[in-house]
Length: 181
Image (cartoon, rainbow, N blue to C red; front, side, top):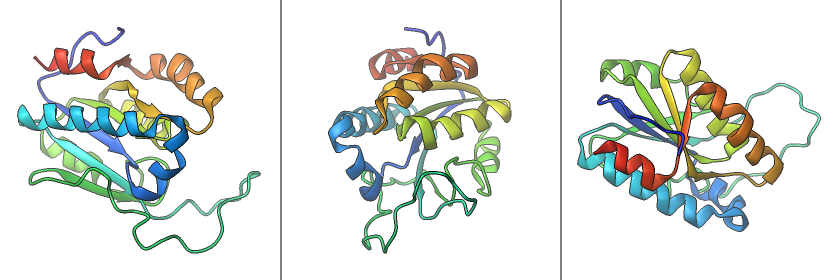
């Protein structure tokens, strides 16, 4: 375990746990990520701490070397697989990170949040972008290491072992729930 403490004013941010994205992660532990994310959400809610559910409905417009998916998405593509409950914050984004061009920072600051726990899909994209932005916004960052996955295993491992330790701490779902007290 690397995670040492969770601030009393922590929030949980769940990235792109939606039907269209979680379908891509089914072969890469997606069901475990969703189950662990649900456990974290329950633990945060039980302590009256904010839970943020993020989905993505678009993408940045810049050119990329890798081809992007083409065609129309199914009508339920952006539907959250963990339903929002009363008091949860929902954020719909158009880029990888949950802070860019959204009200997420204002929502968190308005609640006095000082630390974020980030989980979701995909580790090297939405999760890493959100963790980087949270760090740049001055939040303490913790990533739930068993509540993230990525279709690219090399990128997943790189994020967990090389990037996240520079942005904050990591811990398993069980370790983080224990730290919540």
